[in-house]
Amino acid sequence: MKRSRRLNVVVGLALRKAQESARALAYVQEKLRSEEQKLKQLEHYLLEYRSTQHQQGTQGISAQQFMNYNRFSANIEHAIEQQKQQIDIVTRQVEQVRQHWQALDARYKGLEKLRDRLVQEENAAQERVLQKEQDEFASRRHGKSLWP
Image (cartoon, rainbow, N blue to C red):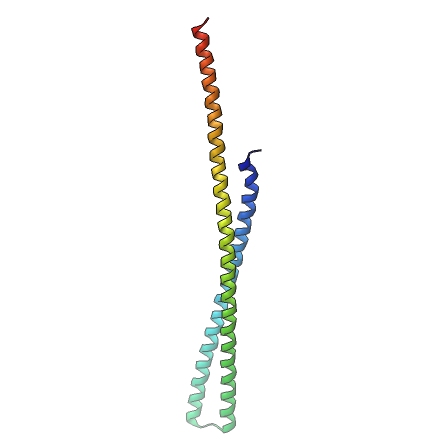
């Protein structure tokens, strides 16, 4: 069996691993977008809550209500900070998975180039053999016609 044919199995496995890694990358990128969307929602909610708090504050609220507003506002701010930390974690995951995918993709492309080079070398060798056979046949034929 030719080397290029044996290498086809390895190239196929490398391709499958690169594709699996690409799917994993797409997954964590989608997770990052989702986490960023959650952060935007929290920040928007905090702005709305503070606006409502300000409007009610101008109409007069009790000290207890004011403390409750501030406590809840602090809870939202804390949730925003936690969400930012979560985004940092997922961002690092995206980068790790991207690097892994790039390595697997580079391996696949390298193996594919090697296989293609082997195919070209095998084809060239086969062409040389065919040409040699044709030359030998032609010389024998030519030799027969010259010497009866």
